Image (cartoon, rainbow, N blue to C red; front, side):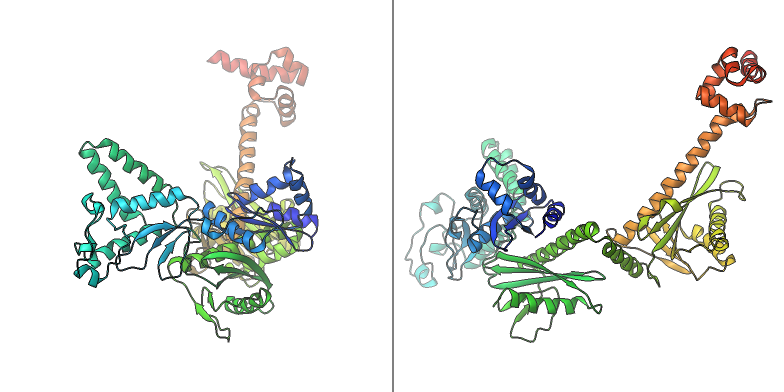
Length: 601
């Protein structure tokens, strides 16, 4: 793969947690690593000088980079583990087996025990994890023990054994750590109520349990048992700062393929995640160029068949965002809640990141395709009959009614065309009347374009609400351009887009590229107009007092300002200094004007 492509991959990596994979020129995997910030971590390989010889050799061999975005560092660590064991990259150390990570088991029993284990046994028990820290497991188990009194013995608590009084309560009962289900002192229903609450804790729902824990802390404090209250507080702090909900949480989700899709005017992007025992072992995003404006459903069905063949997937179940027709014996699940929906959302997130990165790369390598995509998107979003290759935006600018001006900025192919920008000094309107000013400048602009037979825009944007839009429409009517050019108004407060003869405004997605282009136009028009307005006010402020001096003309004023730089310095200048610049006669007029005024004060 060319070096330029590798550079582009480095430039467009996201600043998100995830796992990165390095490949050589033949497509062989060299290394798998995890990162809190993918862009920062991967870039460091290529910007730092490495002391380790193997690292230098690795960097030289890298020809391609792939990555998978996840939500937390914990997810990245576990995913890295899975990928290393699957691919066994040459430059990775050999990782331990899954059993090296602890799980929390809720045993399949009549009165379930809850304990930590490093072995997952398929006996119907529920397992939560894996966790990357035994400290976390201990904290969770300690929290559970503090909130719910559960048995720790391994007795077989069948109805027959309990009724036969086979067991006696142990020390844990007398210490208040167990309610004695072995002697029938706690009902199965009550016990399973606690188990249900514990499952919520292990899934990350700490709200109810933390509330109860905080009540315990307050009670300890009320009873002046401050040391115990402090211990409870430390546990709360640990749990509040820990994100128990991991992407890789449920080992029951096994041998499943997950697919998500998103598209734009030209391309579709289908992400594929392959899961085994709740762990992601493969991620791939397929980019599909549209031929006949295919729907997301058509793109997804095409991609699922292609990807499953390409990766030789034999999974009997797939998760997808909507119903698909695949014509084979395959279970199709459309997740709505829980871990399954969480994994589907993660797949969509990876598709979005891939799409954004491709946009950044295309903007550099293929600007024409980038422009074509934005133009097609704007045509659709703004309900236009043709692509807005040439857009003009108008903005009025006046402060307290003085020096009213207007600005027209021009974008061609979604980029500023500054040579076509135009300023307008308002000529026919007295006072601060934005509506009349807008009517004047729109008329003047397009009257001139028509007279000079220049190209007209496909879209006009008026910075303002319905009033300014109506004023601009009047001028287009007079010029017989009313239905020949599309025109919209944009209100600043809520970014509402107004259309002629439509009382209901259009609201675009705040993150849409169409809205960003419009906002850029509006902001540029505002900047350009304010700049001209400021220059007019400055020029007037400088010239006003000098122009009031009898017998002093424009040429004299220019010479004085060029030499003295300001009106104030002119007024403070000595007679001989003025004479050296403009001659005796004009110097006398200027000097006498200021000194006469000063003498009268």
